[in-house]
Image (cartoon, rainbow, N blue to C red; front, side, top):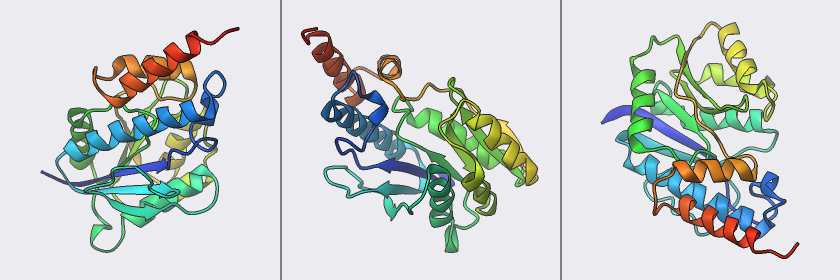
Length: 224
């Protein structure tokens, strides 16, 4: 078992608040269903990864989310960069302050325990003055691993959800003296074509694979 921890940052899947960039063509209810499926598959992979600790930074009430085996911390108010920085602070505190921590979101439900374990191995084996970063094809990033909490503060100043977010994140981390090592590139779910692409990468039988197929069929069957 790795001595590291996995940190998941997510919103509770509520219609009108979750995956709003999927609408249209999705309805708010369909977008929330895709979000719930993605969170569920992500947490399944996290629970299957042999790590010392699992933390979920949650925005909203848990509702029907299965958070078994995870320590839940509330997200702070503010923009995404501020919430990411605060999530690292909440997870890397006290006895866990020096625990290598890999943060992911819920937009890459195609992750597997083997993939996450490999990312953690790269983080743990890296020099203490290093970080690991997994970028997405759209210029954002899906994973960030740190060996200490202090560098996370730079995230509060990085503009998020832009084509240069990963580039700016890398530059900010390098500016405070970290060497940034690369993780695999993964497509994340921003718009509905992304959801289709990601669902194809998910194993048959997973929530995301099933729910996205159901939503796509419903959209295709709508009258013009």
